[in-house]
Image (cartoon, rainbow, N blue to C red):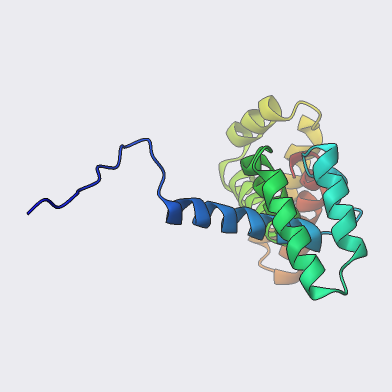
Length: 171
């Protein structure tokens, strides 16, 4: 009846957890190797990490050598800020999606300007002081005027003009 029971302390990490973390670092390493040479400078990291990635770019044709190099990159990543690196990779991979969301926010802002008028213009001018109050008011008036004439092609024109004016500053 003497069964030995091991008590695992709370701060001890299990062997399988260590393996999962190592695998996650290798996945980040694969993503880093997949980036182009133009994208790499946007990633925060040490000189050792970038050297390991450049070696991996050179041996891309050899499967086993590349696997070992990615494993080494995972080892180097243990001493790096992986959260910042993962965030930078995600930003590079999702630029199209980010641009789409920014465009949607800008269209919503344009619609709010048309609906709320001067109060929203004042709020926007506090946020972006480089915008011109007179130009904004003129464009909003033009959109409202063309809405009243109920000509769909004109509404699109005036709203597009307002969008084009807001885009460089607010996007």
